[in-house]
Image (cartoon, rainbow, N blue to C red):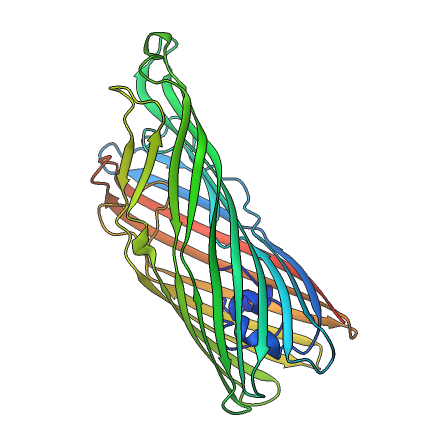
Length: 384
């Protein structure tokens, strides 16, 4: 989820080469030293998504009942003295995660009924302005996450209900975020960043199986282990400022989704009916493009707009109800308003939709997914 700064979200999340506020700790640690204020910023986005599925064989339809997502950000950016070229910062953000929940009894219930994935990144950061035109920075990342995956089991009880499996647990991982920022001229800036892959290791999760009493020995509840790779991201950004009021930014992301080739769970207790699972995902590395603009009115009000295009990492034959993704176009708008010298408020709005038709090679679930996402956001910033 590219929802790490309201200023950037109004510009399709382009911000690697345009340093405006403390969210630069995420977008480019190397450029954070070019932010002239000490800042504390808190923001959140409300993500409302609606999905539908039309099965090819029976023409049965299903809808999602997914709850409202609330990815958030918290940034603190500080310098030791007014003339210091050194900036220290702490960034807390949620770059991966969502909840998808399908209605009861839908045709894909043996593949998934509910999936909740949450990751919170904590990133202490150092940024240094080498010259008036070049800055470098790096942040250490600690990630905490949790997962809850549920699906039905094709075992029918006397009550007429199918069995049910629930896997839940917490995990952690480590990584880093590094960047370089260059201002060749007053009108042009360039940014290059690398966010490393983070392997979220889940140890001693809890697997709970609800099955008929006669099958409880075949599906023993207990512990499981697993690892989920969160991909590396390389971003090249360009920003142009034709005048003091207008800024245009372009980001190109290269995302290493190929690391997510298998969704695997290792159960501590195995039986003939409960073996360790390895479900192929075979994601591919992809590019995403983000173009945004900002125009400042009366030195206090900024209006923003952007458009983004993302290539899906999900290949044909591997589309699942957890990520019914497709190539997509995102549209964004935003506003920023300065309240005196010390306070600022920024808001954004994102809309995107995808349609994907596929037959999964593992589960044979065949149909058309449609998903629409509507995401308004708000952030408050204190400058001192």
